[in-house]
Image (tube, rainbow, N blue to C red; front, side, top):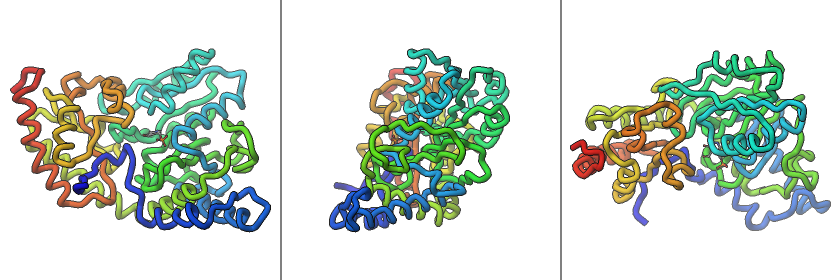
Length: 387
Ligand code: PLP
């Protein structure tokens, strides 16, 4: 296979070689069940606990017992939300936003059908929330605020510290979906009064099929997966040992390199973005350009079909995306960009470039060299009529 220029890291990331090496023994010789009485299985527990410490270290949690391993970010989101609703059965109002990942949004839509009242907060044209709108939405019946840390499509970062404080003083549980931020920007749970935080292994150079949920000590918890006693009775199911170990190493790598990575990735992202904005007419960045993940650039190319751009990029071995992996799979236009009120001529032609530590300067040169011609040709045949 020819070398791929991979700029779709908000969809998933390459497994770091160190992660793969660390996982290997648990997929070959070290296959014991950590719940077993014998030492062959039981001795595996220490590797899980080591991984738990590393994940806790990455997000600055006070204690590793605040980390529960799950199967993915989606399960972490579902666990946090369902746990809270079960813990406070008398309250029926949830506040979230219109731009959440489907892992939260579709669960909220389901909850509406079983008697919950959901407030979906709007975002402005820059993708940011109006904090007063959040304050006004709270009422006596509010049981949970679930608001993402950063948006997967635009990279726009929400002020979770401020939101957490609003929730804390009103005694409301606060969950944040931090699947896109953990490993990309520093997070310190000891300074953030968040009750639940979701993260996912495959977004930070760990394996797919493993995630974690941070549960602050003292937060009411009711398990989502019920069965065996694993994870201290908080998440049943035999542990995905290799992937948990892999997530631990991914967390350690992210923690040790986060400052250098932010600098490197942001420089590459800005080079890509500035070149496109300067050399291709009728383009704009979707989302606030400052309060944004350092790796993400969502660019609207007016009068072109985003899918056509992606196909042309694909022909050049460049893997980008039109939004979230799920959105591009279903070919519907982005609910995030729609909520921001972006004109449809830009939404249709929006492409998300999301970088990682594995991108190189010459890859950005290669993308920049190809983009103007791709857009130029597509505009010549554009159904939107602009040449
Ligand atoms: N939340 C956000 C913000 C995401 O971007 C994603 C994945 O794209 C998820 C949740 C779901 O994570 P997972 O794929 O691990 O279920």
